[in-house]
Amino acid sequence: MYKKLGVLFTAMACVTLGIVASVGLSASAATSPPLVLEGNTGVTFTNNFNPFDSNSFCKEMSVCSLVYEPLYQFDTIKAGTSYPWLATAYAWSNGGKTLTFTIRSGVQWSDGSAFTPADVAATFNGVNNNPAANVNGLPTLASPATVSGNQVVLNYSTPEYSNITAIAGNQLIVPSSFWTANTPVATATVTNTAAIGTGPYVPTSYSSSVVNYSVNTKYWGSTPAASEVQVLSVDTNADAATDLADGTLTWAGNDIANVNSIFVDKNKATNHTFFAPGNTVTLEFNVTKAPFNDPKVRAAISAGINRTELGIKGESGYEAPATSLSGLILPNQSAYLASSYKSDIKATNSPSTVKSILTADGYKKNSKGFYAKNGKEISFTIEDPISYSDYYADAQLISSELKSEGINATVYGVQPSQWYTDSANGSFTSIIHWGNGGTNPYTQYDNWLDYTTSAAIGKSANADYGRYHSAAAQADLTKLAGTDPSNTAAVKAATMPLEALVATQLPVIPLLYGATWCEYSTATYTGFPTPSNPYMDPAPGDPELPYILTHISVAS
Image (tube, rainbow, N blue to C red; front, top):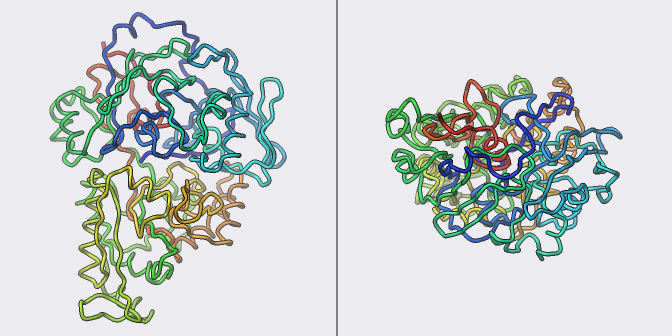
């Protein structure tokens, strides 16, 4: 839903749209109504704007980029589209091991101090030296980032072509002073008055129910149309539907059942949705726990899930059931799919397949009707936030299906803050989780399989939540990262071993092709991304917020 990665394309193809110098507020911005957004329900607000703390307000609500910005903006739903942002260009050299950014001049931090290439280098060095702050899965630097004039140079030990979106698009840049002012940086509290960035907004007031932002008068880009942005606390998806219907919310990112009748049909001229294809939703197991370290058990569980029912009942028909165990997003990534994994998932569950796999693996049903071996039955919980009504419904459906087939699966409903913590720490048996989006398959497989960015159980990881450690997968990821994404044939060849591993070992179990949820009203603001003009991922979240908010206009 929120962590979105994209695809590498050359800087020569990039165009910056509508970026001009600004001084103060324009007349239209000074009188414009607040733009009220919400992209995540059930979050307990805290006065913490730390972009390196997974449990901070700005990370859990995915609004850090209102204040802090990336070097580039990538449209993860439209292949070949990216925009220079705090950097004006980038170039690979040394066979993909060296990445050089040309940094935009004339930019100021919101406190009026100059933004410099040294700040960019400090951000990458700070993340590299503080692994817990690496919330975007950046590759490890081979040597410290250096500055040469208006350029910043990053060196890696292996080619990192396919990591460009994580490096340039997802990593938000902070002042060099951030690293000394906040210790330890990954858990430091950065209050609204201490949040200094280059972004279009600054937080002006904080409460547990709403956070207010006003335009950054030092902003380097075009002045945003909305003079004020409000981030609203919403408990559930149903509450978000009410707030959309009554006009409280301008822009939301939720799976809302019957959204057309609740919201769109009330005023088709102004009320809209855009559910762009975004990722592959999976059931992810902590594979350090028996019997889920057994790929045959994972295969049986996969066979027992009715994905068609999940799509219709759990996701209100807005998300399609996964059809390939490879995990690739279809049809977006069909160019990379091997024929052997095309439509290898049955439309409905198969109790006979569950029985066949588990019986061959030495399991028999016990007196309670659940499969067990050596006196230990297959029993697990699916942990997901109650406020994520779609995932919670999916978990309940999976539990019901598997129990009827002899697998004791139960649902564990929690608050989002606990789920984020448990996911990162590996303190779960299973979770339903969105995958990384984009058009390059590397971004998904890296998130699922890269154990160099994970950690021991109980310590926070930014990828490989299930702690699936495979030397073969790591080697395949390294090869794919070093493959130029513009060469489709080469990317497919490098992707196929990872497809085979995911499809046969099932470190994650593909469930659905996840939508990027977006509901918005054009009553006060127009120019949001639309199906006919998908200039950016439409959801109200990081890191796309600065781009969209500087491209919308006050409704006439």
